[in-house]
Length: 502
Image (spheres, rainbow, N blue to C red):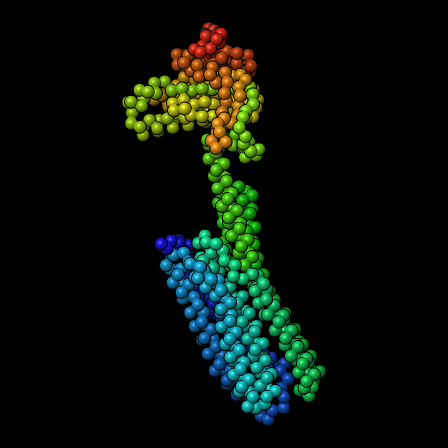
């Protein structure tokens, strides 16, 4: 079954056809002008009778072949792009053959352009051979040099103009093919910039040695000036195109890295080709995807066990076992939860519980604690584990007081007893290697749970171990009062009970 691919909004195939067709026309016309300039200024012509007539005949022939070559190039471009345009419009992911066809299109276009110029060189050579063999060789070599440059520019231009197609082909998520390296691009630049100039100068030098009668010091000087100027102009343009082709994707990666450094992992860079840079872009996208997944897992992990526990686990790894820590414990238990489930629809119960626990989490978080677990209609909040909390007694007492007030005003449909205790407990990962949880086990947890039973009848529905008032600051302790000493269920000895002042 072919998977449908979403074509980006605004992506059109006709601009690529238009731009590439225009580029082929310009590069071929430039090649024709180059041939004419070399023939007039550089080419050391042998002694041929009626040289003016020969030049006119070559111009007439060029006026016929050049338009035919341009038309052939435009047709060839559109034949290359037509199946790609049809594929883009279909919205389907490309198969391996289609991806290779798209990625190799610039090389094929350059090959066809080069073949057309090679044929032109042979035709001009054959035509001028009827006048003079040396002239035929020189003309054929000149046309060939121009064709070399035009083919190289066609490759660079087509590669850039077809980026949209390449991007579409490489965004399907399939493994990135490696059909060529940046060496091909570098060789195209060399062919356009240095190869033609160096080969042209070499031919001029060889001609001067073989047929010194055809050349003079003036001709050699002009040849050097012309080829030097061509090297500066053509070399600069070719180097610019190649540099932009390589710099643009690297710049995109650099900007994407900056976004990741700012914590924005929802980033991906477009892949324009299958060179080393394309593989770098694909690798970056895989890395960004891994960071997004890791960030999502960390967020999910933090929601389950608390941000501090998640941060410690990611930083130092996870191992079973625990350590004794002095912790503060707040236990909150809904009153009449059994009747609530019987009187209301399940969806309504869930919505009500979510509102209730939302208040619990907000209050606990704002007072430097974290909710360790939810137990149906109850919640357990911890202070002092896995990291110590300054002035813990004040924080846990204030959280209990604020929580009682906020629950009464924001979730009046429910009532809950809040028990507060503190003391030494074992905090750590409990379970097995494949499944464990971070929790706190010890007497303060049991005591806080028992205190919720008394809290359901206490002022503000809050009860705390009175010993915490001696550890809290005076401002917070002033809100509380110590009453009777009570023996809690399941415990030996009595516990001083602190409740809120009326």
